[in-house]
Amino acid sequence: MPDPLGLFWLFFKATLLSSGGLGNLPSLHEDLLARHWATEADFGAALAVGQVAPGPTGLWVVSLGFLVAGWWGAVLAVVAATLPPLLIVPIELLHRRFGDLAPIRDFVRGLNLAIVATFPVVMLRLVGAHGFDPPTLALVAASAFLVASGRLPSVVVLALAAAAGVAIFS
Amino acid sequence: MSQLLQQLRTWTGIGLQSFGGGQATQLLIYRTFVERQRLMTPAEYAQAWGMCQLPPGINLLALSVLIGWRSAGGAGSAVALAGLVLPSAAVTVLLTVAYALVSHLHVAALALRGVTAGVAGLGLVMAVRLARPPLRASRVEGRLSLMASVAVLLGSLAAQVFWRPPVFVVLLGAGVASTLLGWSRRLLSGA
Image 1 (cartoon, rainbow over the protein chains, first blue to last red):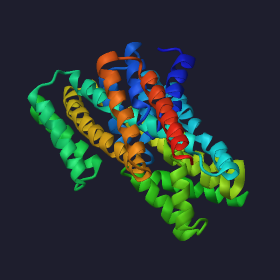
Image 2 (image 1 turned 30 degrees about the horizontal axis):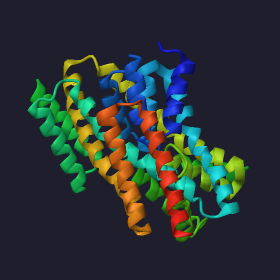
Image 3 (image 1 turned 90 degrees about the horizontal axis):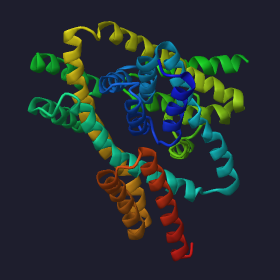
Image 4 (image 1 turned 90 degrees about the vertical axis):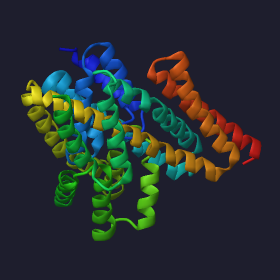
């Protein structure tokens, strides 16, 4: 079992330098895999649970925390995910006093663009755990198409992907 | 006190009823605080949501903190955040426990392989959607700003492919580069 303080720091650091609910994925993916505290399968499961559970999908880290270190991991992940958004209070006060916050806006814009750039790499590693066989790649493409078309909610797309997984890989 | 309790109930309801991710949650928040309680106007809501893109982490949590803060200060923030997060987090853990119970089954492993491929597809779409707002905002600011944003995006990609630094170096570097580029652009235009 990973030490609680180190685990909390990884979750906290990843969220502190992120933007949005999935922005902490690239950092966590890198740090937890390097320490062998989580597997690619843990990430796949946690991201899926985050989509299925009610509330913000960003709470996927709570599922990841549980998979890594049980109940304590979940509690640590909740705390690490809720502290950074509290910075909205100083931002509100700064905004009241100084008006436009152009430098902060520019910083977050760069952060967002970098997260976009890291996503494809993380996604490829996630599916690459079992090798890049044609059925897997077809499933990735089909899911992306269905979600992008907007005709089905993402939860339904994931359920279909699960059924397809059982049918194809068995 | 009774008002805080009521807010707690309101936020708990929002957290538990919003299936289908962030957009569902945002819609419920809008209906509750703009249309029903009339705590804020549509314009104030739009301004608040825009500002909630600035702090790190889940934007919806920042929104709950901000709405709570504006209505009842620190206590309001705490109640809003706890109400939105705790019940949803509890359900998230229960679902994970359920998964952990069956994860050793062969059929669960196969389903997870399918789901992971699905999640990857979802993530790729998400990346495109994440890229749109910053690129659109910088296009509105003019050609220089758009060029800066495209350079930051391509630079982050290139850094990963050719140099492979730790992720936080890429993120921090992109943030700092974007801040400096914005600063020099405003300096050039004399604004």
